[in-house]
Image 1 (cartoon, helix red, strand yellow):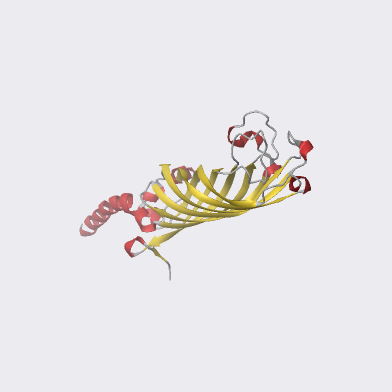
Image 2 (image 1 turned 45 degrees about the vertical axis):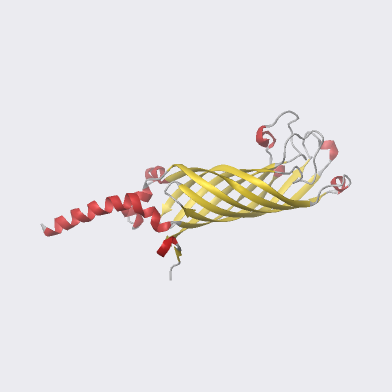
Length: 250
């Protein structure tokens, strides 16, 4: 009888603890990601008319790659702050575009730093499970649907870039690089795999305050350059120590 009472009390204490406190035990997360970078500048493209956010010009010739790393802090269960660093390549070419006769081509190397805020409008249920925290929860495929986070993000960042153009672009007196501000925004999905590890995919666009990321702007340009990242991510969660600071394992 005494043992049964102890089990019931432990269960009653574990339920509210798991629902309200488990996320606080892992406030800090580190993330690494890699994926394609999609660029929509004045060089290249097929659309002569209005082109919402560049998507109508999406093609593999304007695609390169990026890598990124992040440190995330969980302010609440649904709101995070994140510092993101990224680097990679952007590419633009008139080949097979609507201005193929210009024969312009540019490669852009970039480095980006941004401060982001994330809002989770769909939160997983696995994170509130005491058994999940202890690594004892069974994970059949159907339960993965309850282990997904879906979020939106935005923020502010800085973007350093260096442009290398072909001879045709050099002859036009191209801009060779600089520093500009960017406004990120996008959505992401995260799979809560186990108490220490998440996997995710994130699509993020950047509005820039320059029209020279490809070293060139035309007389017909009506907007600044934009680019996108489609990143596949791995996230490792750190246990929180005293005062909410990350506690490294020994």
